[in-house]
Length: 143
Image (cartoon, rainbow, N blue to C red):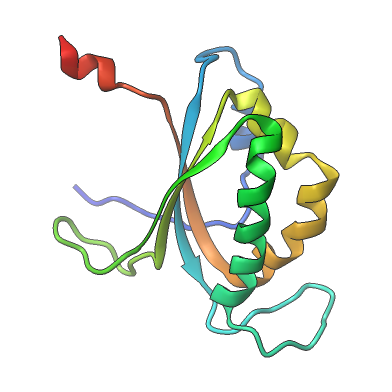
């Protein structure tokens, strides 16, 4: 069975609508599989010597400081070293997990003036990513 993987920088309409749909109303863990551009490319045309990773780090560092304002926090960040099972054309560069108290809290943060201000670095640095919304299922292990 083949699986098509398409990295993106922004969600499509259907994915954004998912934030507004009823469903799980507790904490979510957003798993981010990140792929960086070799060189940062700012949409406003500014010249920079930053790599994509360095531009994204400017965004990421600001997000880590912003998350607590919305009740969340940074949970995990790690370099992708190799693929041990399965097959994809290209690996991601970094995996990061952020905790939000609810989908609404994440949406509020995404729509905040602070995110608008720092988002330029995200766009400049990312070649693409997958964001996977997850909910805690550890109680299932206790059964």
